[in-house]
Length: 139
Image: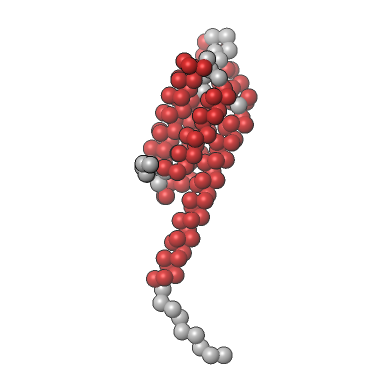
């Protein structure tokens, strides 16, 4: 399995590009099925949280909702045509599919939190090993 380390910007671009591509594929193959789009969103969230660099862990739960909205552009209905109709379809899709959005954000947040906790534990252990043992004085 590849082990890329994406910067915060790279993680956002990766997630956004993949969700837009999946939205286009969903539109072509499944006729804009929101269930398929939502199910495909969850592993993208997990991959984004796993592949982001340790220093940029906080960005993963931030970029996945933005990528979800960006990927909805080809999937959301046109709402009657025009830019206003397209925006209305996008906002409606965001409101109706909020469960998928919250679930993916939760996945990214949990993975990032666990990774950060492990990183902090590892750093504390390294600092403890680097410090000399203090001598105990008898009481």
